Length: 574
Image 1: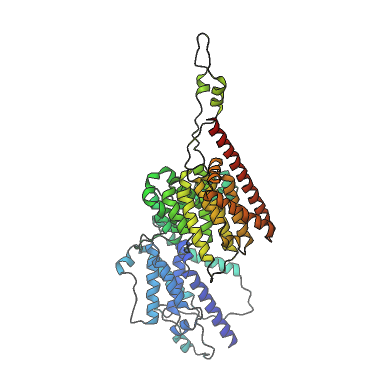
Image 2: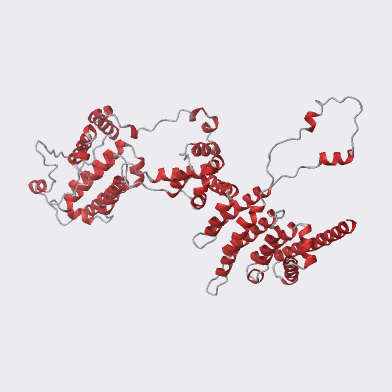
């Protein structure tokens, strides 16, 4: 009785292993044609041989696993996989209710392309049913009568022309296992000799990459070169609209053209790596797709073995979009990233791209042009005596660097203003009575403050530079930041205000102090806040940040006083 129970348990474990392998989606996508055919034949043989009572007594839920494998094969674009799913589903329906056979595909599609492949599949199933079936009796039913035992065998075993031979085997006999295995391999090669002549379809043939062997770095298993080769082999879209479609992972309704999850992930990853280049090469297309593309790139996180290059490519694509079309991308992207729909990773990626875009817009374009005076100096021939007027002034003019136009005027309206609005809303949500901010919220808000300081520094030479600095200083003096329980948040507010104070131009400062403008008043309020933090803050880093802010405000006041004196002197002399 104990041996019979162990045999039943072992049989159920084997059945579970076969069904788990057959029903997995990785097996459907990556297994060879031969392995899929034989394992499907084994599953069909199990369905044909095992009785419905024993099938229901298996604890691994075999019916659910069969349905999972059938669903995975129906999603496959290969007709062979769908035929296998139809065969298994038909066999399962006959086991449950023989009067209601289930056919998932019609007979025309089932017969199309089957030919020798399906004939071998059927022959393998019958071969397994005839030779490899073990009938296990229940522990309470021990039958010695050969006639009764023959009645318990399945109908496939009692096929016409089948003879069952029972031989007495000595349990102490020494068996040559290696010889038996060789004989079975020879028999298997003989039975499957016709399989070698079968030509698979073109969609099942994978071309071998002949060029990869010529690369010495690939032969030496260099991880960086392998990653670069894999990224270069990804499918790349040709337009920005195709990038949006790949990033949104649209699925086709037609099963024959439906892509697998691996294909969708590769297409999305390739689109992320292509956005920056397409934006620089095709800027005319951004007028219609800029904001949608930015949001799609922000949420693009396809499964990949190389996550670090994907993160860098995503941030680079966002920075390229923000610097190329700041008015179309900046406000909607900032409002979306800092809303409740996105998490901290989306906010940090957006802020990192904003800092790069601010640096690009505030820097003069690198035209690479050189002065032609030195080049034409040798080509000019003078006759007689040459007289130069104001030689020192001409020398200073030739040595002076030519001023180049920047796009710093776009920073305040498209970056700083939307970021301030979103930061105010985020701070109100975190200051609500029922909300308890944590360390992650303080880190994100600290990065927002630092990015605001960078925006003020980038817009210092713009017309609205003083207004941007005034708004950032007023936000840094907010009571929710000054009285926060998180030391990191208090430090970030002081550092952001110090960045603004060091970036303000001299002349606007002098005018603000002379007229007692709001900029001068908010600077005095921030200086008093920094002095109080330096005296009473319990955090040592916060006190050091307060000292830096006090020094920045003192320098700001000194520069404003000097500028006022210069303006008064120039007005008096004029």
